[in-house]
Amino acid sequence: MRILVPVMERNENPKICEQFGRAPYFAIIKDRKLVEIVENPGHSLSKGAGSKAAQFALEKGVKKIIVKKEIGPHAKEVLEGEVEIEVNPNVEYLSDILK
Image (cartoon, rainbow, N blue to C red):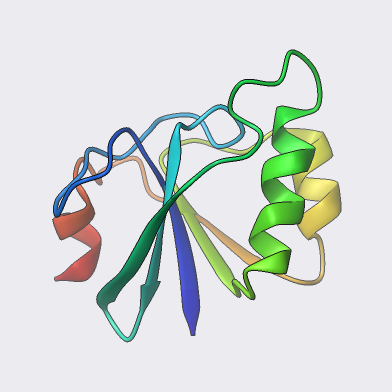
């Protein structure tokens, strides 16, 4: 299963971003291994960042998103029925998820 996590930087153990739509990057995980870290195409938009990020997640074939806080209603609407959303306020770094 492909999992998407919003992160702050592009390195081996990035800090998890508290925002989904405005996260600078997304880490893509499969089988508890980091596959890639990609730029979030919605992070710099003045409007619609969450929806753009959600559409990008669908295009990447993601089946689950792990976030620190609830995502916004527009992003949630795009993802509804397609992607499981897990809210975990206790994760700080990507390594917390890869354990």
